[in-house]
Length: 312
Ligand code: SF4
Image (tube, rainbow, N blue to C red; front, side, top):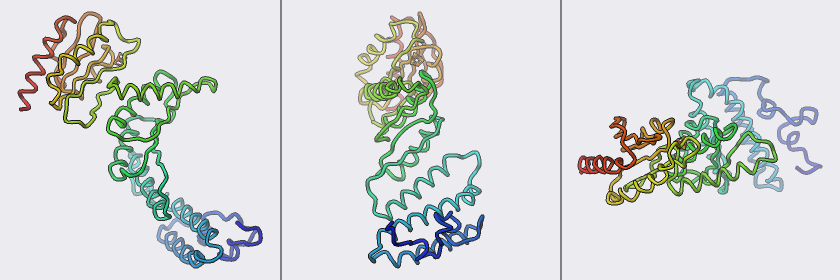
């Protein structure tokens, strides 16, 4: 603001000794005022007054002050708002705050902004970003899982969130946050690039639905838990065998290990997970048995045929 002009004092009567004003002083209410109506009315009153100067020579200063008053109002209303929510629900307040801030930016004419909704729990990251995108598909989203932790767990958490969101076209920029020393920070970028490449190729850790009305075959990217390298070949063979069903909206998940395979195939129509000598097969949640590597394709095809017949 201009050196010779004091808008706080001139427009709001706040003397230099009280500057910069705290939120209460800026709105002209008593310190620790908590009545939401009083706060709301005070903010409206101050803003109506400041708007009088918007078209004058100090229009830019007026706008800056309007922004400060709006921020103060939102901040002081937060405790009252908090009481409106279930303490166990951390998603809805985050969402509503994001929508509110977007409305505010929109009202000021901003069009080039990006929103980030983060949590350390990947499931919450998925939930909040999905819900935000449903209502504001026009606003770009920056994706990330905060405090994801050390690799490989930190990468896995981030991967799960990104898989579920990016596969549905949600997300415009990403950040992988890992607990690594500063000189190892490039690992975050490598992990991010790897996750994006894997999602594009259908190599995913969780069952993802790309939202297409066609066959969806996913295979985990594999890791040290794989006990039989035949898994890598099997994933390719499943793809080739199932090609005849490409027009059917069926998800087949091929997972590389017995540790995560049983749980991670839960959301697939047909799920396979690999042990050292056998491949386990599941239809929905029902386990169908374990089959030799050279027998599993035949068995899978029988199940796939039955599934197609049941859907037609
Ligand atoms: S399913 Fe098993 S083998 Fe595949 S990436 Fe996950 S932990 Fe590793």
